Image (cartoon, rainbow, N blue to C red; front, side, top):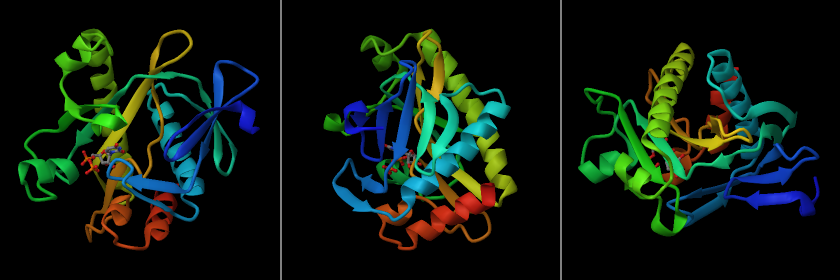
Length: 234
Ligand code: UDP
């Protein structure tokens, strides 16, 4: 991988071209950002840990029949993936209320809702990734109602698989964010990463936070929490 092969650099990852136009290398950095890029820092070894945690999770999802972009790990910070055009929506699932929903609606963190909550946000840093609804997404030409239906169904399945997986390791999957993309034959598949950067993960007994909230809220021991997650799910 050389600088010339760089296709895109995001806040936590770099995407490189490969010899095959349908495949990319995804390189995980140690950079952390929160609050729409306002808070930034380096977390040592985060890239290594998230590359490995995402591998374990995507392999588990593949076994459960969830089609996704992950192919294989190349080195400790890099994975080979299908190249996709990311659909600019963040699908968020909430099993317990936390984060922005707790704040916006003044609900105590950790409250269990009567149902599982699904949200979509527009991926747009300038607008701060606003919460939108299905009709907005279709009106903006982002996707069709049928495509939304497919992505919500996949999201619900991913929630079931991952909630069970984490629970076996005494971890509560509080909430998470996923992204989908279209591959070279136009099929919508799960893409991006799934890691403590994109999930809220609490120890089932102590409710200790083992995710990026340790960075957002200055709780310390961030690397230790990510190591703990990896060791439990491996
Ligand atoms: N999330 C994410 N990227 C974002 C926004 C949210 O990965 O740009 C994840 C976040 O880590 C949490 C879930 O989605 O697991 C719900 O996030 P929330 O809406 O509560 O926003 P936050 O308060 O985390 O910014």
